[in-house]
Each structure stands twice: as structure tokens, then as C-alpha cells.
Image 1 (cartoon, one colour):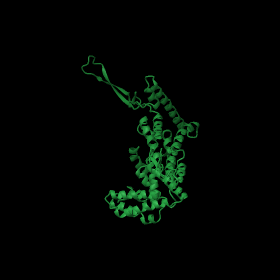
Image 2 (cartoon, helix red, strand yellow; image 1 turned 90 degrees about the vertical axis):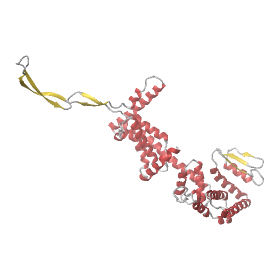
Image 3 (cartoon, helix red, strand yellow; image 1 turned 45 degrees about the vertical axis):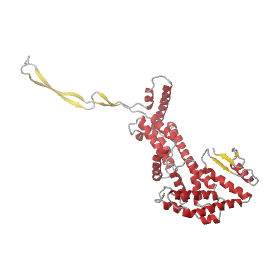
Image 4 (cartoon, helix red, strand yellow; image 1 turned 135 degrees about the vertical axis):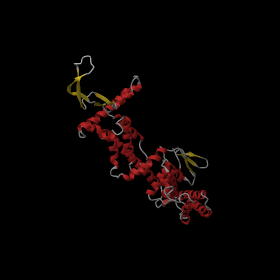
Length: 414
């Protein structure tokens, strides 16, 4: 749905802004009820199956895109169901007829003899008529349209499986039309009204559940990414964690950037604005500023469990700056010192701290790896690496661990 999302995402953003949040939960129910409770609206376009399908589907799509967190995503099944119900509930229209005018005699008066006739005694009579509008013969000016059920039955002619399917749809159409007529006749508080409204209630509930699940999943991804970080992690690390997690689940760049900004980590280095509106984005000045924002001295003085992650972030910024022709030589020396400090820091950890270090890395690094990729390390089962074995087994329970003679290990991410 990448191409469609380029169309639906701007629409979703507009709807999200102009429609009050208090109204949004009601929209799926109102959209689903339109084929049964809004005959005037549904009759736009001729009340045909096609026009009703487009109107009902359009209302459903709009109600989905208006939900918070949609970002252009929508449930295609719900859209198809709404369009189908709109089409199958088409009641059809009766033929339109009009009566012509009737002309009747109003008076008859004697006339004069006709000169030169065979019988000069024969006289003509003058007949005057009166027109009576609407009392003439009836004529059809519009044939009307068949109901959805009648139309589908008209397509059946072979008696095969396809015809049985059409007959099934036709019966469904008859029931939908009957529910609509019962609702119109008896009202929403009647038995017929309850039956009719059970359909939009079910579909509206389903659409709300899908929207809520979408929001929940997105938030869960963010929460999991942040929970893997050490307490006190800076904005850059938090923004990077969110970015990596969301990339893993297929979110677009715009969605990632906006999520990071809304979470308050917009200034988090490379993962900050991206192309989200900074007029300097992509320039040499922009990427130089990203590098200058890194506190190299603090990282040298205070190595921590997140150092590999931070080093990866620095490498990204160095590559970005070099790509646009920037001179990275002033930063390389401190970058090399940071890498050395990290190695020394890890070597100096006691057994418990080393376990915590490994746990931190194994919480973060899977977000770098796509499904089907591999996660690996070393010191598995060595005299000084018993902590590695314990942490790996705990972090990936039940996973097949591939071991190598040099004590390296590898796990495939499925």
C-alpha cells in the first residue's frame, strides 16, 4: 500500500486536525449506518449499486483515516465490506410515468353551407376543444432501476456454480433491503430496527478495534525500544532506538520522524528532523552541526553500557558528513579514543556488570537486524565468558544457537 499511502496519509492528517477527538469514535458507526439510515445521502448519484458502493465505501474510508494514529493506514477488508453492503442494499427505483393532456370538445356550433359542395344543404360544424392536463394516456419517461437482488438474479442464466453465488448474494441483498425498510417503517427502537442496526454496530466496533490495535502496536514498539535502554540515556540514544524499532516494523520515514518529534526527541541527532521541515536538512552545515552536538569529551571520560550503540550513532553522523564533502578528520581522533575507551571499559567489568552489559546490547541490537538476519557474538562457553552463555540463553529461549570452534555464536532472527 506504499503508493496508496502517499494519497491517504495527507487526507488522514487533515481529517485528524479538523475533526474533534470526541467525535472520532462515533464515525465508524455513523459510516456503517448510512446505508440503512441515510436514504437521502445514499440516493446521490442515482441510488444505483455503484453509486451506493462508492458512497458507503467513501464514508468508511474517511472514518478510518480520521482516527488518531491512522497515518494513512486503513483496513481494506472493512472498506470492502462497507462498499459491498452499500451496493447490496440498493433498493432500486420504480419506473417514472407521466400522463399526457386530454383534449375534449367544449362546444359545437352550426356552420355555413359549403359553397360548391354536391349537396349545398350540408353545413359544416365548428368544434371547439378544451385541454385537460394530466388526464391523457400514461407513458413511461424513466424505466427505473432494479434492486440489487433483482439485478443479480438477472445475471443468472446458466444454472452453474456462478449462478448459485449470484443467487446467494441476491438473497443477502433482499435481507438487507428488508432490514432497511423495516427500520424506516418501525423506527430504531423496534425489533426490525435492532436487527438492522446490529450490522453497523458490528462493523463500527470492528473498525474501532482495528484502529485501537494499530495505536497500541505502535506504542508498544516504542515502549519496548525505550525500555531496552539504560536509565538516563540521552535523547539521541532514545531517538535512535525508536527509529530502529520502527524501521524493523516497516514504518515510513515520515512516520518515524513524526513519532520521534512527538515523543520529545526531535533534536536527537541524525534521527531528529530528517526531512521533516528543517530548511538546512541535507546540507553540509546540517550534518556538521549533528557532529558538533556529540559530546566527545564526556564519552571519553564516562564510558557506559551503551557505548557500542553510541559509537554506531557517531559513525552514522561521520558518514553523513563525509558524504556531503565534509572534513571529518577533526573528529576522527576522538572517535578512535572513544572506541578504545569502550574496549577498556568492557575489559574492566566484573562478571555481574559484564552480564548487564551483554543484556543491554542484546536488547538493542535485534532492532538493527531484519527478519531472516543473524545476531551473533563471541566468548560463548569460554572460561571468562560463562556470562555470555547465560545471557544469550535467557534472552533467546528456545532459539537454535549455532556455535563455532572459536567460541563465536549465531542466532537467526525469524
